[in-house]
Length: 193
Image (cartoon, rainbow, N blue to C red):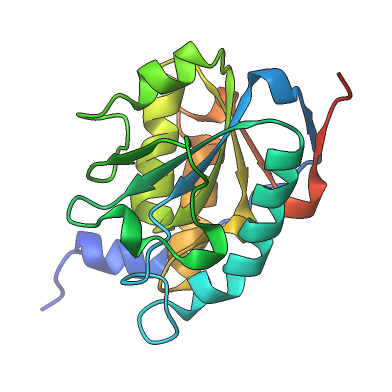
């Protein structure tokens, strides 16, 4: 007796689409913020998430470049973390705000007010977990009218599929597709004042 295919059978037959295209981007430093999402000792270490450790030098280099250009910089933490948990390679400087939330860093925080007060129109998102904080904060940013730039080599997860899925989702979702640019850390440039 033959049974009709189940949804799981159909999922097994799905072909993974190619990764979305990446583009160089030039941003206005006066209206752009760099958001460092959940890069903490507990979830960015060689045992739990080695992919985060591999992305850490790239995020740190982009963060230093953003600060030199005068971008607003803000940090997010998971709901139980403290500022002391942020990896030292990307630690906040005095005056850089830190918010704590679940996966959407706008939800239940003053992140939107912080960005609006700084005149921000575009947010660069880098961090871990790609399919948690990066995906949901990008969706939250898009819903609030921000332009989103995600350097894919600056986001990490426990496995490459989660990173690829997040990039695909951001490039194709009705909520984020028109507001998101996927790029690489080294392809982000800033317009002269």
